[in-house]
Length: 91
Image 1 (cartoon, rainbow, N blue to C red):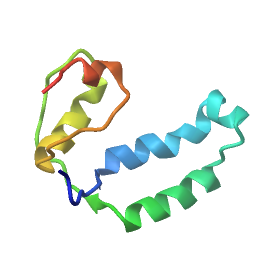
Image 2: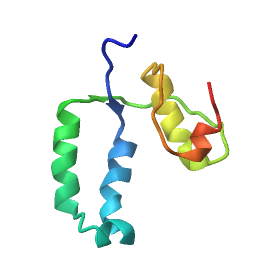
Image 3: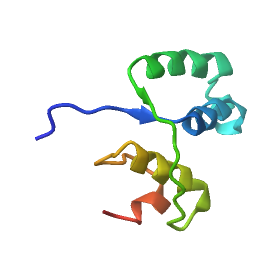
Image 4: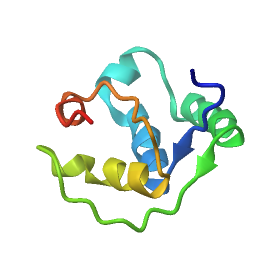
């Protein structure tokens, strides 16, 4: 049973989330840069920033390599994602 967990992020994750306000889908949902920044302020308050130093080159989508580097450097036991390219990797 999992008693406790930490949420980890890197600067690249923050950049990716910040850019969501420029995507038409999110614009239609009225999600603004201000809304995202407010979310990120709370997210950062309860998360651990990881400085990623690992260079991971694994998986179908090289745009996901940074996430695998983050998982490695955070010594993550789990990576929660809906990304089919990352889900394909398995354990």
